[in-house]
Image 1 (spheres, rainbow, N blue to C red):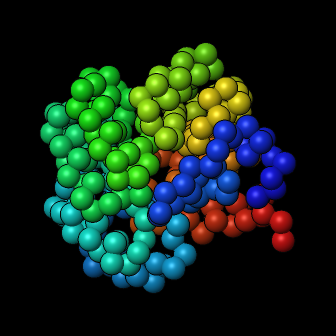
Image 2: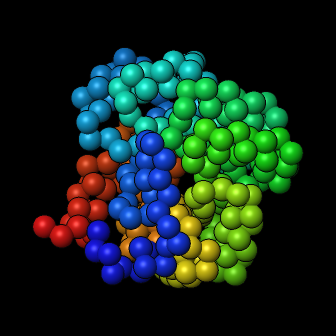
Length: 258
């Protein structure tokens, strides 16, 4: 990317572990909601170009697959992954208590994910267990993403900034905010918040608007401080995810010099 753009200029420092880096060039992440043979073949064909996969363990479990087998497969393919066990209150596919979900995420650390995702709501509900999870992840140099999802609307900018500050206070390495976009005002709110929070907290971020109207934010937010873009390659995990090939092409055209 152009190093004079606002997102890199306002970042305190690039986040990097031995599997992934955030804060300089945008990373396209593809959610994994199924693990059938066709999906495995598709992963194998794309293994050299995929930057990051999000294992949605809640989807895999609901579809009868074992997340640990998926993690082992991706490790053998040397594909970095985010491990997510989403709360049913934030679109998760399995109704399960917070402590039980945290235990599953804790167990994933043995497979050395590049990142784990922890909802801010889960952190607040189970603070002690969440703090231990974050500490254990950091000991292994695993990136922690603190996340907030609102499938109803986009809160106002002040509310979103407060959410980001609260996420940062958990000790997370990346701040994720995803809200449902209903109109142009919501688009502008998300984009302005992205740049303002980047300047204020100077941490890697993942910001996106959900729904058809919100699609533009998934690309535009990258210029303002969002480092992680979710795209559909194996099936969408949230409304408004852009097809993988189109997302890669738009990122190439808009953010890289030929």
